[in-house]
Amino acid sequence: MFEAAELGQKVSKREFDAIAPELRVEMVELQQAMRKSDFPVIVLFAGVDGAGKSESVNLLNEWMDPRWLKTQAYDRPSDEERERPKFWRYWRDMPSEDQIALFLSAWYTDPLLDRVYGRIGRAKLDARLQRIVQFERTLADEGALILKFWMHLGRKAQKERLKTLEKDPIRHWQVTDKDWKNYKLYDKFVETAERIIMQTSAGRAPWKIVEGADERFRSLTVLTTLRDAIREHMARRAAEAKMQADLGRRRKSQKTAAGTNEDAAAGDVGAENGEGENGGAFMPASILSSLDLSQRIDRKPYERELTRLRARLHQAYGKARVQGVSSVLVFEGWDAAGKGGAIRRTTSALDGRDYRVIPIAAPTDEERSHHYLWRFWRHLSRAGRFTIFDRSWYGRVLVERVEGFIPPPVWRRAYREINEFESELVGHGINVVKFWLHIDKDEQEKRFLRRQDIPYKAWKLTDEDWRNREKWDDYERAVNEMIERTSTLAAPWTLVEANDKKFARLKVMRTVCERLELTLS
Image (cartoon, rainbow, N blue to C red; front, side):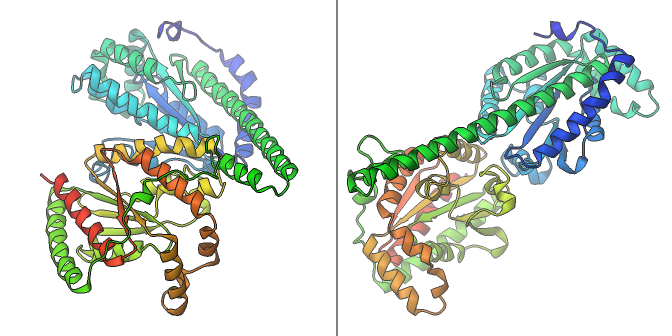
């Protein structure tokens, strides 16, 4: 695999100087054009020690405007990073849509070193590479351009480079005992690198192997590859946007031609929401419709059980704090279903220093400029704490789907992305508990009307709440599919019969206790 990167390819100073001025202008102009783009660029440098990874990053920072470049280099994870899933620190550092991010010693470094030094076997390496493929696919599917450069040197060339750097009065610090230790395992590094590249060089996140012996050849290869990839990605995104716009106009024209016929309208709703041939007019028996919403509890037994559950949860929370077990609680449900009340009863058993309630509304400008999962990843707490989401990433397959904010292919792939996200959390030992609080339409209307008459609750009721009721059936279809496709063994949904708030609050607290106790050792 690496033979072509050991040919001794060179570029003379005269050749480089003839190309460099125009290329530098092109890179700056391309970066300015990117400021109006709708995608980030993620550039990852890996490879042989001394092959020019940091030099390539420095060159890009020199040639381009550093205000829209984001350089990230990683060492051993800090205590804060170790207490969160492995990919947390990479998600935290993801660029916004107008940025180019340059990553050094990133997500490939640990699997490579762990395999070379015998800390993991081949099967474990492959499993970790599969998680990386999922991570990169999630970014690429949302529009990110991912470029991965493997900077290579042959064994002899690497030895010469390390010796040269050791003698350099400015850069000698770059060579450490670790580099020479790695050099002694050169063949093992190359063997592992081949496996990594073969398994992770996907069509939308390809590797580019770069011969690093000649600085000018290496620089031109990196620069021109990056330039051409950004240009092609811009053209592809523009073509895709035009195709979507044309499709939207055709659908609008078809709807207009259909007139006001009710059957046609029902069919259009189903098509927009990605339903099958029967469209949105047919409502089969659903998971939600099977719930017994008549379940209730009287006040006195409620108060006794609430007191008991608070004590039980407080005890479990104390053990979780000591053992470093984090919990992520997700609350979804109909407007006025009682999410806030259930959250308040739950947090009453916790210390305010050890939990955060994250209310999720429409994304901010900063959040919109990143992958939709970015704002959830960055809120994950340290070990032993609770992160409570009042609405969550499931907005992708609920509000964004039903309201038509994203096309069907986008929300359909979100099921996979969400399952992978939650699997990553559970794999790190986080206790993930998800609630759907369910009420019927009549109960919701009663609660809306009561809110109007209570001054400290009136602010909760908006015109949008009333408007959403008109799409109740669409939302119910979306909720049922969400539950079917994202209730996994690792992160199952708990459906809460919430027509009676007291019954719902007890079920929520009891479930949190049970799930947390199962997680504790």
